[in-house]
Image 1 (cartoon, rainbow, N blue to C red):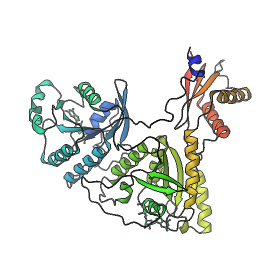
Image 2 (tube, helix red, strand yellow):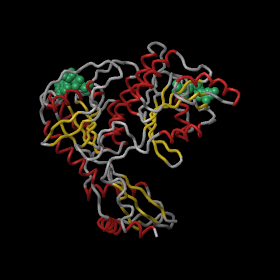
Image 3 (tube, protein in one colour):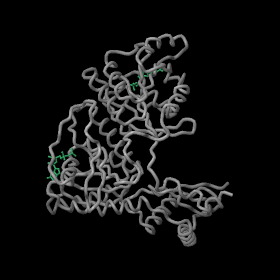
Image 4 (cartoon, protein in one colour):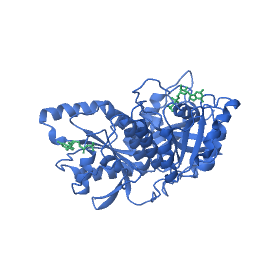
Length: 455
Ligand code: GDP
Ligand code: GDP
């Protein structure tokens, strides 16, 4: 019986302790209009056309969770940037470089009718050098007759080209079978120990909030920001910093330290960086700046952090710029606009003067402790029993759904499963979630409450 399995803790240990294993990462690259976005939609099984003909469309999300034959992988979609005939070589190269840095395998998409172009040449050189597995995709092969077009792609050094029609789905299943054979079981990117070791922090925020200043202040010296031009050599992406007598690992700091050259497509790269950093991190520090709080971009970055399921700390920088009046006004603003993340600890800091920088570690500790926390099944059910006795679910159409029992299915972040005799009202679920937080804390971590309905 499922109950017995649950109570004996069989569900109990998933996702806990042990090495952090991340899904393997597949990046899709290629020139504009070859059909990358269409292929992404096809792979994700999305019906709605995210394919946009309008230039200047910003997409927040560039990494997606995808599945094939019961296996999960992360898809990096590089189709989101604006089409712009000028500078296209540079942009495709930059996109490819970023993808290669992040990915375990690369889908290199060309339009079968066009073949590989001069823009593609530089990219191919870089791909060969990277030694990452590359799968060549000849898209827009809508029928058998067009397969002949792919013959020219054989000689490029990436093996057999896969003829597909992203639009109609033709050949995509074969392609995905091959992708799954190519991808490792878990992501090998970064090779470095993801197991144990210093805790990993993603310091994220829109440009000019003070990420680089804060990093310098925390690292204890004003380092020169080296302007490494896009090339295949990389400075170390992570930085180890001593804070509160411990070492912390700030992930993906190369992206923070390097100045953004590209005005165009910058949003896309910022999102990619942000999501990649979150992916590798255990806790996110979302940096906001008091001179412009909660811009659209702040809100998007915060949303990515929340959705990532990582522990979360909010830091308000440039506090030195505030006078009393402005501070009172701002605190009211923050109270209102951040009601949905009231669970995240907040620290007010000044990266410039170093004011309150020692408040960061206690906030990180709190958030990570919550993120790791596991509530024993007995304790959880005692809590649920009392809660339900005091506040039973309202009767709906003569029926009253009951909670049979609950268990914490995993931690990092904490996820709960409630076994019920009917669907719980969304309002009642929110009530339970709120009470869970009131009772057990969970300051600094998102939590999830799911249901399994016994018919
Ligand atoms: P991206 O810029 O590489 O992301 O390309 P898009 O996915 O936006 O596709 C560019 C254009 O090619 C769109 O008009 C698509 O409808 C079209 N397209 C994409 N895949 C196929 C395909 O397999 N066959 C055909 N005939 N057209 C396609
Ligand atoms: P990044 O783009 O997020 O890395 O931001 P930077 O660290 O480059 O900072 C952007 C600007 O804000 C720079 O001019 C910094 O000197 C300034 N700045 C950063 N932190 C503070 C702060 O705490 N107070 C004040 N007044 N200015 C700051």
